[in-house]
Image (cartoon, rainbow, N blue to C red; front, side, top):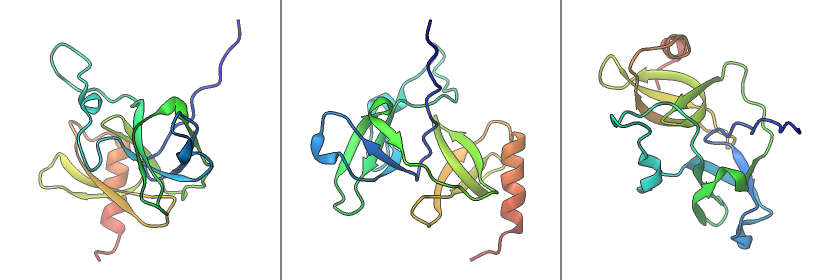
Length: 154
């Protein structure tokens, strides 16, 4: 029986290449975003149990953008994407938000004790950010909260 290598983790804000059926998007670096960015994808809102609760998991679909032409691949499947290696800063913390992985840098308050704005690194050398609601702040989130308190306010 052959063992397969684990699927590489895809981080939002990283670069990937695409090798699916839309050949005009092949052979170029694409910027990775959540599938539901700038629109609604029904599969992004899948519920994984009978009570309608969402559990952290790894999503199987993304949006990939060619930043030179602004052409977008909506609902690009993980199997058709290959990450381009990137060195994330040492203080990056891998955080799963709604099934998507981010190389998080720090958090700032998001409006309540459980809401946060997560600031994350990108391969484009700018900070991205996304809002999330956290049930219980885990050690990684507490670490990001602390990193946020040490950052200067811009």
